Structures are given as C-alpha cells and as structure tokens.
Amino acid sequence: MPALGLRMTVLAGRTIPVPLPPAVTARLQSVKMTENDEERSVFTVTFDAGRSRRGGAVDAPGLRDSPVSVFARVAVVVMFGTRMSVLSDGIVTDIRLTPGDRPGAATLEVTGEDVSYLLDRVERTAEHPALADHEQVLKILTPYQQQGILPDVVPPVDLERPLESERVPTQQGSDLAYLTLLARRHGYVVYVIPGPAPGTSRLFWGPPVRVGPPQPALSVDLGPDTTFTGLTFHTEALAPAIVTGAVFDARTGGPVSVRAHTSERSPLAALPLWREHPGDIRQRLLRDGSSDAVAARARAQAEVDRGIDAVVATGAVDGARYGRVLRPRGLVGVRGAGWSHDGLWYVRQVVHTLSRGSYRQQVTLAREGLGSTVLTVPSGGVA
Image 1 (cartoon, helix red, strand yellow):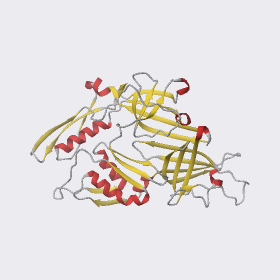
Image 2 (tube, helix red, strand yellow):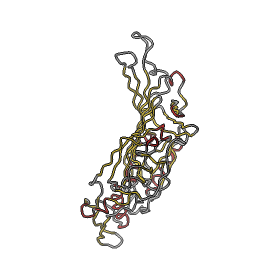
Image 3 (cartoon, helix red, strand yellow):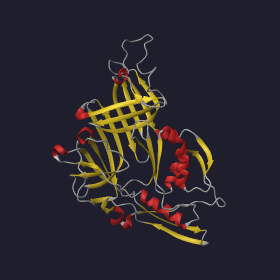
Image 4 (spheres, rainbow, N blue to C red):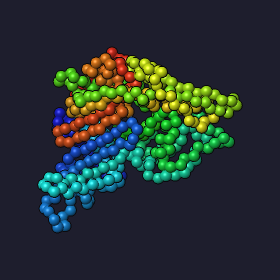
C-alpha cells in the first residue's frame, strides 16, 4: 500500500499475531474496521479466494493451513512513514467464502471483534464484597493482563464502598457485561484501545475523553489542504434531558430531592443546546435504587452527561492526505466550516476502509451545540 508513504501490515496467530506469509499477503484485497464509543469494534479482512484451476478437489486458498482462522488473534498495523499505529487487535469470529461466478469474483471475508470479546465469552456468578466499583473493575481485569489486555481505570467521583453488612455487589453475567453495567452508573464508557504494540490492547473504563490535546484538525473547504469532505451537520434536539427525582436517604431517614439539569463535562461548544433552550429540554425521572443521596445525584448527573451531544457531524476523511489514523473516543479539531461548526469535537465513530492505494475514514463527530470555544486548532496533514 504505497500511497504517500502509507503501508499496511496484517498479522495473525492462534495466540501471538505474526506477519502473514507472503503468499497470503499477496491475496489481501481490503481491510474494514469500525470503532465507536458504545459498541465493540469490528473488523473485516477480505482476501482473493480464486483457485488456480476449477472443480475437483482443489480447495479455495486460505481455507486450510492459514494463520487467519476462527478464534485466531488478528492485528492490523498502519505505517505513515516511520509512524506506526495499531489499527485493530481482535479475534476472528466469522469466515465467509464467496466462490463467485466469474474470474476474480471469489473472496474470503474474515470478520472479527476486538479483544474485549475475550471478556464476554463466559457468564459467571461472582461476589465482590467491600469493593468500590472501580476496585471491582481492577479485580476483574487482573487475569486478562496475561493476554495482553492492560487496565486503564479512572475512579469515579462517588467512591461508594458498600459495607458487607448492608450489601454485597454480585456479578451476574460475563465480565464485560458487568463492567459495562458498572460504567453506566457513573456515565462512564468501556472500550478497548488497540496497541501500542501488535498483540496488546488497553481496556479503558472511565468518563468519555473530552479534555486533553485534540487530534490534528480536519480541514473543510480549504482547497488543497481539504481533508474532510461530504460533510453534513445536523441537530438532535431530543438528545439532552433534565433528570429529577427523590430518594430515601438511609443516613438522614427522610426523602432527598435530586435534580440534574446542566452538564458537568468540559464544554466543546460556545452555545450548548440545553443552555439555549432550557424550557424545551426533555425531563426524565431518576429510577435508581440507591439509598445514598450522594450516589443518587451522581447517577442523575451521569444520565444528563450521557445525552448532552445535540449536534452531530458526519463526513469522509482521506486518510493518506490526513496522514494519521483518526481515533474515536477523543477530541479532534475542525477548521474551515465557519464559526458555528469550527472548533473542538468529540469523535464518536470512525469506519476505516483500506485497500491498495486508498485509505478512507468515514467519521461521526458530536458536541453539545454550536460555536467554537477555541481560537485555533492544531493543523493536520501529512507530516
């Protein structure tokens, strides 16, 4: 994949992924990778499955004695010059052969999910006595480190450590399902970040990343510097919500009102929709079984924070021209679209499609309203 110094390498193996043999690499047609902030990342690697001769006992290439087999670990690495990015680290879950009815039409599609699949294979019942939520997460992730999955856990603000005499946290289901349940209580997310080396990943459990250095800017309508095309902005007015309710506080012995109506996340827009139209925002009741007023307020705030992104942008990025792998679950700058839509955005989803001489990234961005909060954003382009 020589376009503008862009190269791609696919590695696979039963336990440790290694570069594919030259004969298999020669049949590689394309790679598609979808990653977003709410679901498990999915990849599809497509090979030419044409046979040297028709009929008889000749099998399609790649079906036997191939490192790309079901339950194999597959990593996709993209190189921009000397800069390496691990695009995918996952497990093969599906192989589909399409023989085709004309020369060159036969394909072998290898599909898989990121390594969080390993946390979702076994359902279990387990108790985690006297552990706060983030401590339960660290306990659950410890055995997976030997499989190259490293924990990245952010303790929540409400460190509620249950007394064994009152309740014992009990897990019912897979490790991933339980981590996701715990995360939603705090407005947190759970996802896997591939890399930094092939065959390793980092499992993040914490708040959506809306602070810190953004990725280099996507450029709109800037002539030869344009990297972001086919752009559409739309407003989802029903996304934000106000959450109200009341809980019985065991400490005071009486009811305590709970109300969350503004987001506590770092603002990305100068004019948030929930602030511009406070009387029109949906109202939702808090449905929480907590007997702790502090914890209930944290749950209400988490629900408000989860739905603040009312403006969504979609478009396509020329990966070779941009010169980098754009990652979701973080920030990116936009420039050239005008004050209302320039500035910082949260990257919700990226669909990567790579083939020989081409790298396209279909991107979904989101933030809470219109208007830039910064004067400039870091520029992009090939370094």
